[in-house]
Length: 211
Length: 360
Image 1 (tube, rainbow over the protein chains, first blue to last red):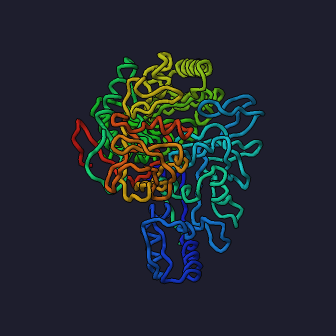
Image 2 (image 1 turned 90 degrees about the vertical axis):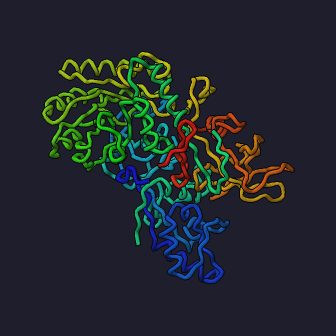
Image 3 (image 1 turned 135 degrees about the vertical axis):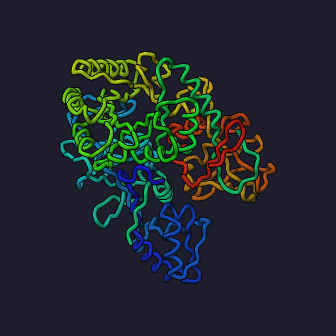
């Protein structure tokens, strides 16, 4: 689904998957290792990941196996790197007074006058509604909490005294090496498997590939 | 509707007749107010183009998509120009020229967006709906910004027409919604005083439009209820006179030691949290989901006879004993919208109208 390609993206780092393949084939043996590309390669793209595997002379399987997530860096193994980064753009900003409510049901009220950013990603993109008032996104180098209910296509961040501009990028998870939250942090907070998080985002968001 | 054909992959069956009946009931309920069929998020996972076409066939003259790209896709797929298509999540560098030529309507919150719209060369006036923030605090102009937004749109009337004035409300409580309606009425008065005369004033979505006459104004935006998705908290679709539109099924692929494997998993959008909380139904009998994996789930069948090739119903209208979307939402502590919109686009959608399958 390519709708809304400007506002939220799953960026796939194929170099990370290629490097993970090197680690895994040397660990298990090129002949024994089977690349698990079930569920559209865990949301990373069957054709792109399949091509990498074939180039490395690795067998692929469209039926999942319990260790399949290793290829996508979804385990705690420090030698394997996560390949998906999910981010979305700020689409509106505003400042509200203390006591004012935010989003459906007003499940959050501003304790003090504060700045808000509306970010173009929601539960229809794979950002769990259970992250409402719980999860955080990284924006301008600072983690800001989601306030109020996550809606179908948007959520609100409480920026406090920080500010943001329309078009700024907010990161759900990405590369911990550059200070971004890890997919495991996001998954852990929501008590969901990492594989579920990436498979769902990857099936709904437009994917952008880095080679 | 349950499909009896053998299947090898998960399938979402969309009953467009039920969808049209829901629209007809909702239209009658809100009349003389007009109804906008909201088809954002791939028509809540039901399939954008067939659903939008069914809405038009049912006589709907307003369609809501969230973004311009989806609006353009509808025009490319034959949604006629006399059906207005409202888009409101506008990109920082939106391609307004194509959108104006396609006669899409824009929900506008800022003067900056008005300036971007008039900056493009277009052969026709842009159709805008000015948005006021009445308390939801997502987009929409603040009360302070509102007069300037209206005045600027009026000053640009050679390039644009103020088709609508609108807002979203929080549905937090009766009294808070009443306060939002009052703020909306005040904003309308300001706009009219400045000289605006919008064709449509719109505020209410499914629940408020259904229950409150004072939330309807000229047009209501209906998404969830048109798909037979109710708000929960004990309110079922049938209590509203609505029918679920989607039935989700998947085949049994293996049976072993009192467990059966069903070919649908969290990679298809089934929440992993369904394990231990939700049952699937095969031949009218319910079986608890014991685990959800990437591309399959496992159910406990005990000593029952279940065979590979059998069809498991995950949710549907409930007519064959299957659970409903509302049962899933309640068991998982969420709303039906989240469950249907997170289903993977890779799940095959089959569309039926009057019992006949449509070719896509």
